[in-house]
Image (cartoon, rainbow, N blue to C red; front, side, top):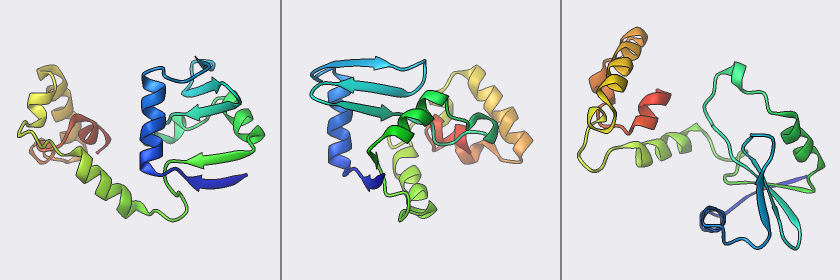
Length: 141
C-alpha cells in the first residue's frame, strides 16, 4: 500500500464534488460510519475522520479496517510522516481564530458558554483566554 498526500486543491475539488453530488455513480454511507463508497468507472472509498478523540473512542468499525486492508492504494490529505505537530498548531491558529471580531460567547448559546466556563475552570483555564477562538478550538482545548 502506497501512502501519498493529496494536494490541497485536489482534496478541495474532491470535497466539492462530493458535497454537491456532482459525482457520476452512487454515493452511500457504510454502516453509519464516516466511510463512503463512490462507484463510477471504479470504486473509491472516502473516510472522514474526527482527529481529536479520547483513547476509548479511537477504535475503528470493522468495515473500515477491512476496507483499508483490501485497498491497493491509500492516500492522505497530509503527509503523516513528514508533517509534525507544529504544522497542526499553525493550522489551528490560522483557521481557529475569530477574524470577524466576535468572541466565543457571541458564537455559542449562553447555556453552552456556562458549561464551557465550568469545564475550563475544572481544567484550570480562564475562559477569557478562549474568547478569540472559534468554538471548535475551544472544544478541543
